[in-house]
Length: 478
Image: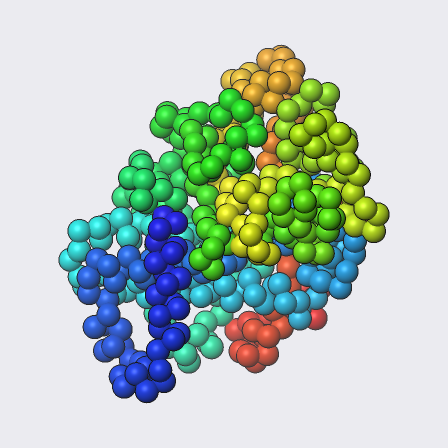
């Protein structure tokens, strides 16, 4: 998959370097597009463009997930998107919201265009390309409704005037008419695995895992249990070493199900390492990467205190407070005036330049599936059967297992805690709080108001459409 990232970037560079005379020889038109969408290679490149738009958005996904919730905060508050999200002061003119909206709809536009053009051609991988595209479109809409609530539902190639007149669609309709059908279609055609050159594309396991997550979000615990149970029969397993999940050279292992892929050195890198690290010379010298000064997504003391003695996940998930231990066992303090807590989950290979590291975004991994399955089974009244799935994750962390005699309420609390410890800084906590109806209860003390279960619709989009009957603002925002 990373090979195709490189190809796409090179293609973009090629076309951007062409002279204007060359570009203007043939006008951009439907006919021109039809000439382009012919071969397998054409659709392969078009699909890579969909991936590129989704990958761009996931460079900043933490703004709408971890940074919003109680496990993460901005210690060094600044006038930026992360601080606004953290402190629940995001306004409708926020650049992060505007960029996210544009990224998602760019990916959706590219997906719709590909799906429209591929219907009339006969190419060897047609079914797979359709399945991959629909999977990615489902990812986009799943995020959009969880971030913004009702959004315009666009599944075909529209004219500009039609786009201006497409109103916000109820969340329930988007689940029923787009997200679930897209994922079921993906499930019917995606392969169980890929050859090495295509590693990183979504598989059958990814489609089933995401379907399970969607069902869980909808409170459909029966279908969630059934779908997640299927994933447990597909050969996935927990990595024995928690550290290797993040520091594995390829980031593809038996616990991997699907990542957003990043590659350094070709303009397709991630910004997470630099943005999450303290801006400290000693850390830069030791780890080979320096914080950019943004210093976002810092672990809260509440999260740090949740880890039990001996939990091997702790030093990877939340690092060491106010410093680090070098290879000789010496504790090296980091300077004052910078963030004193940080996560090491994305510190994979260092970063040759700011914003260009190769650390992937872990979208679905097997531990997440086990914890979701435990939650679904517990809600279905199968508490004693749910606890072993929870305990598998606990055992890998080398902490004591829960007794099978726990009741449903205590098991529910244990699963919530385990998701925080296992999956922190992987984009789950805020959405878990929303899904379980605990967001306001949990975050009101850090600035949340009842209407802030969704972010504001970008002001730039509202002004562009200029019709409150089509695109209106979420209540509580201006």
